[in-house]
Every structure is written in C-alpha cells, then in structure tokens.
Length: 132
Image (cartoon, rainbow, N blue to C red; front, top):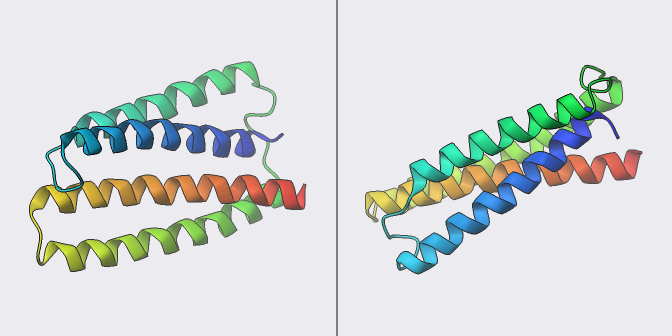
C-alpha cells in the first residue's frame, strides 16, 4: 500500500471520527441550526490528521516519499470528485444563507468540507482497489 493510499485511509478515518462527534453534538444541541463547537471540531480534525500522518510517516518511512504516475492519476480523479461535492455544498450554503441564521450556514459549511474530504479519501481508496 503506497503512502498516498495510507493518507487516504487516514483522512477517511479522521472525517468519520470528527464528523460523528460533530454530528452527535449537533443532535444534542437541537439540530443543524444550533450553536456548535465548530472551531474545536476544526482544530481536532487538523491535529488528528497531522499527528496520524506523522506517525504513519515514521512507521513506514521508506514509502513516505515514493509516488508514481498511478498515485498522481488517482489523486487527480479523487480531487475532481471531492471538488464536485464541495461545489454542490457551496451552492446549498448560498441558498440557505439567504433565509437562515448564521449558525446554520457555518454548520453546513463545515459539514460540507468534512463530506468533501471524506468522499475524496473514500474515492481514492476505491480507485486504489480497482486499479491495484
């Protein structure tokens, strides 16, 4: 498994962990329009992704700088899918921001970013398995 595939697994795992905790906090707070711990969730996402990537780089140091044409092709294809999800989310944000309060806009924006990154990582994993 290449480091790029390991990275995709890491990002998918972090998206699921932070997304699950964040979604649970929204449910407990009363729904998507409720005030949330969005800044804490963003920090947790960044810290988890960095720490796990560093740990994997240390454990698999021989693979961490290797990349081939297949890795680059898969990354490009996954970026396209992730960007499409992000664009659709941004359109939803624009539409809802015209009629809703600020917390809803912030929550949807953050969930959209998590979804886009999670879909990108998931898609990379699928492409590695199909083209592997």
